[in-house]
Amino acid sequence: MRMYDLIHAKKSGRALNGEQIAFWVDGVTTGAVPDEQSSALLMAICWRGMDTAETLALTLAMRDSGHRINLSSVPGVKVDKHSTGGVGDKTTLILGPIVAACGLKCAMFSGRGLGHTGGTVDKYAAIPGMKVELPEAEFIAGLAKLGFANSAQTADICPADRKLYALRDVTATVESIPLITASIMSKKLAGGADALVLDVKCGSGAFMATLEDATTLARSMVDVGKSHGMKMKVLITRMEEPLGWAIGNALEVMESVEILRGQHGSSVLARMSFRLAAEMLLLGGLAADLDTALAKVQGVVADGSAFELFKRFVALNGGDASSLDDFSRLPQATRQVEIKASQAGFVQSIDSRALGILAMELGAGRRSKDDVLDYGVGIRIHVAPGDLVAAGQVLLTLHASERPLPEIEPEWIRVSNQSIPAQDWLLGTVE
Ligand code: URA
Image 1: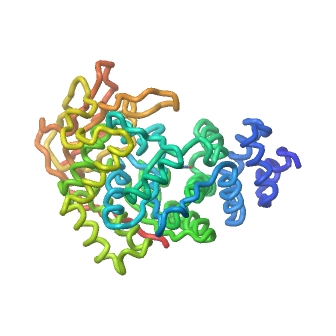
Image 2 (image 1 turned 90 degrees about the vertical axis):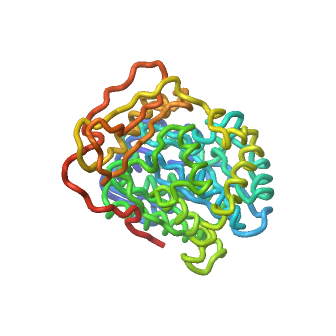
């Protein structure tokens, strides 16, 4: 078999068979296939797509390129959650302890951030002392003890995805439905959970800009998961403006803690986190209907048990749990700079992609994978779309270091005299 023939076949619009796909993925893992041939095939897949059988074969070949976690020693249904990536998305930090406090086993593997979206692992790493990459035995022990474990994926899981994702990142081949499906679902299947709630982001700040594409991606991931016995539910959620008031690692920990303490209960972030947690309870069989599931979720926030569980999780993994009660113990920026409205009016839009890039330039995110993060820096957003603001009112506070500030463009937060209707955060569901 020759890579040349696979590239030629896909370029010409023909489907690859399972054997061909396994040959490629194996060659990626061992290094036998050079990057230029994988890059060419990735680009051909981007243009020509893959059918369901090809997508499934690619997912399984990537899953089997490395180690698979076996969670069967922990009794009960294990539920995972994944988001396709949004700016300010800290729902994982919030819903993990909630789900576990409700009595369901929540086993999640998370990623580091790259580009304009952050990663859950970086947010945990902002907590002093916190160990974010757990050996498998510690992950499983934590899951058994607390009902909640969340760690960075270790290098031995889906090594083919690691290599292919790095190539996709530099060859403009990230935005492909079969490639995203295989990348996400191979890791989820290797992670060993029985059920998965997916949050597919849709909008200008997300990989999927239209509801049609987001729905196709959701369907593709559900088909792959279900064909491997995984219980699946997808929420398609709006990603136009950043999620919540915080962008930046320590700031996002603070906001997550505030929600776990019962603050900001009517915010989009709280409602989205609670709904995702409720969907996890439904998949895990802990509630018969959505209202019951939501009531359980709200119950463990109101009685403090979810926040208590989060503190135990942090302490178990070496983190300073007292920093969650006393935010001055979390990393802090050295200066704060206010960005004010130049005119009065209604906030029309907040550009999540631009603010995600701004946070990255402040040092909260990585431009390239070896960048070192500054956990204290980021952005506090003081307004939401639809808010009426006065001229001179503070829109953003930049939590910055001493490095020069990036350029701020006025149209990143558009203000005009037209009021706008409330926008729903939930755009659809797929199961
Ligand atoms: N997240 C992943 O893990 N892979 C993708 O391809 C896109 C988002």
